[in-house]
Image (cartoon, rainbow, N blue to C red):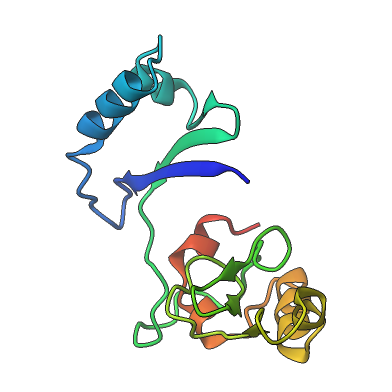
Length: 152
């Protein structure tokens, strides 16, 4: 297991972020973890830093979180969902990624079905194959600004 502290709130051309607390967060981490580096300076050199064994911090640009009532952002995208990541909600619902925090793309329930069977299910396979073709097959994915950020 790893802990990734993500400050994904940097300004972009399209989105102005509210990142005024970043300095406070970075100072607190430096103090609590007894770091001998200034994180604000180090993060200007590279956006991902290992703080401890399996503890990381990274900064990135703000993006539009997916919402079904938002206009389509892009349908021709690649995403790491179900390839390198998935999410399991507190009720056991398996979702393709952490951005589906409301379970809009339920793939199954880990309390009822094995993860292997869930990942081999029709919906999960359609998503995986779609992303392999750079095609979002789920409506929520078409409205995700994060996937657009990683467009290949």
